[in-house]
Image (cartoon, rainbow, N blue to C red; front, side, top):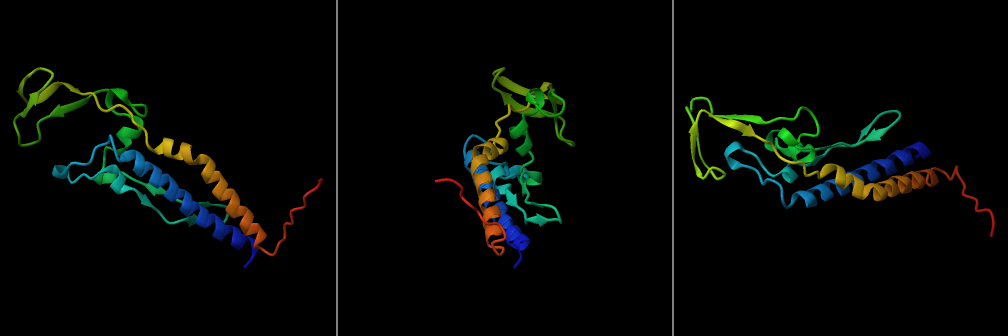
Length: 172
């Protein structure tokens, strides 16, 4: 096995380990204070949508992708970046709330007004959700361990490649 093959194998393993580290951190953060899904719409908790892909290799790099959200948790990005009036990505504003097609009115108890609301649309709209990031903090809090894993695997890959690099300690 050549030096570059050893490096690639080591970096591949390090990428898988770091992806799992970040995914586990996100799952831990998402275990409380986030929506648990909505069976009525087929939605599930964000943490249940986290998928770690395969390592992708090109001639010059390796990468791994962590995906989450999608159709089963469409609100995943809203919690990372905020939505509606609290949006930090994209335009800010309220979301219109109207009765579903084929239904003449929205009907719900409006706590703030202390009364039943019945009408074709909510006049004030929905303000969205305030951001409560879980992706970037998971990366940030594991940054040093990620760098350490990648550095270690790179070094091991070089050393296993026929000792083409020799470390010489100078001094006492």
